[in-house]
Each structure stands twice: as structure tokens, then as C-alpha cells.
Length: 121
Image (cartoon, rainbow, N blue to C red; front, side, top):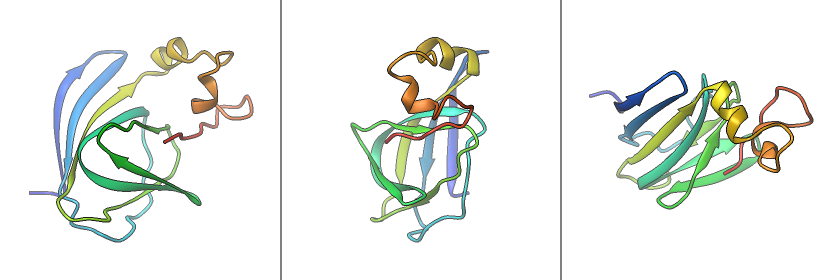
């Protein structure tokens, strides 16, 4: 079995919902990764750390993390046992509907009025 198991639950033109399981066998920082779409990640089992530059966010049950398109991050697992998360990949059109650039939510996704996105966690 690979490090990840991904089960697709729903795929439409605006959103993809997946159940993602990671074995968590790599305890040190992973190589840098990036998302191909903006993801809202809802961990429901286990724990991992998301490292974004100098910022770190604990990913555990009852948290939500934003993984923004094209933004580099690393992952580590402080404890053994792996993790599982429900992920929602949002299309650009849905993202703009949820968080228009003029809304108070826009700061989670857009920085400085450019296409560069920020991650909140």
C-alpha cells in the first residue's frame, strides 16, 4: 500500500470531495508539496503538522485547514498512527462565490489584491 489512500466521494464541475488516509510513517518534514486547487481539509482522525514557511498548523479533528492553489507547504507527523481527512477541492468559480474578493473571508484566500493566496489554519 502506498503512503496515501484516496477514496472519491463526489466529483462535479465545482467541487470534488475525497476521503484521504495517510499512513503517517514519515515523521520528519516531507518534501515541499503544493495543491492544484484550493482545498478545505477537515481532519477527523490522527494528527499531523502543516508547515507553511515559518508558520505551523496542527491538523487534528475539529480543525479546518486551507490549502491554497500553488502554495508550497510541508507535512510532518508528530505521533505515529497516520491520519484521515475529508477534503473539499473548490473550483475557482465556487471559491469566488463563497469568498468574493470584497468579502471579509477574502483574506483567507487572497493577499494584497493579487492572485497570490494565503493559507489559514
